[in-house]
Image 1 (tube, helix red, strand yellow):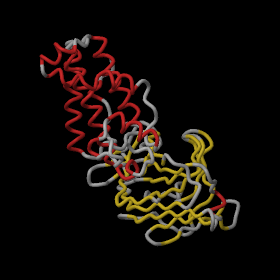
Image 2 (cartoon, one colour):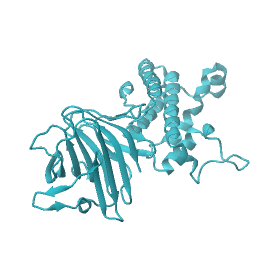
Image 3 (tube, helix red, strand yellow):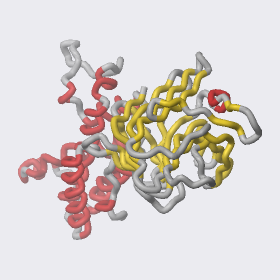
Image 4 (cartoon, one colour):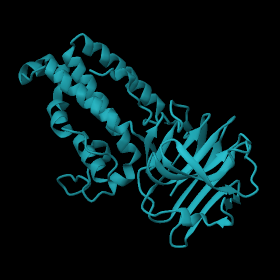
Length: 327
């Protein structure tokens, strides 16, 4: 059985809740190792419920707006706080917030009432089995749940998918792009595709020797274009438009015009307007222009393809993003 205490819970931006669940995972690993089957089941299911309730709170507005939102017998909407885990799971699937977790419905339905076994008479009355097999099923469902959700970072109603590294979005709403054992370090991609107006703005802290790359036309981690901001002031790494056509290998298409590497906190704003055929990359209020290496000014919009994804990653050192706005 995997070491569940080492699971990544960075998708939980409420750090107090994250600590509570991490403590339960640590305890869960201990009780499972000594065949404490009932404790394993109860802890596993409670962690699943805590995770689902947290994700539901992030997407409360989208869930409440669902045409399939559950109703009470009087026809009025069910209170949000009273949604069952099965109802939350179905609503998250319907809104494409989560992907299907194999056998979730059946296994959760099997174990949801085991919490009542805290009362010995209830356990005697139900006569449900509490053996190693049941414990393995419960902890397996928890593993599958965390493995699936831990691929994501949730920023407001937006979902970002982790490609590499371990990016963290903390309670102060700062996105940390930490270093990792890959050239792209912490690499995130917006889950939805860009086929209409798109706006992204944030304050960027490159730190010392930091590089930030805004990615667009993302197909996979070996096929995309990116706009680079590099504060190392090296001639061989100018702020530029680059193209990747194989993993961890990219080349410069065009360089930013008369731009020195930015210093301090950077206000970055990116606007893509397909109807206007406009793509703006604005740094501290200054629209960047790019010169092609073959000569002439590059029209940035002509580099953009609708229906693909955008994202970003860091190089060299850790990078921080704050005041993130996506629309």
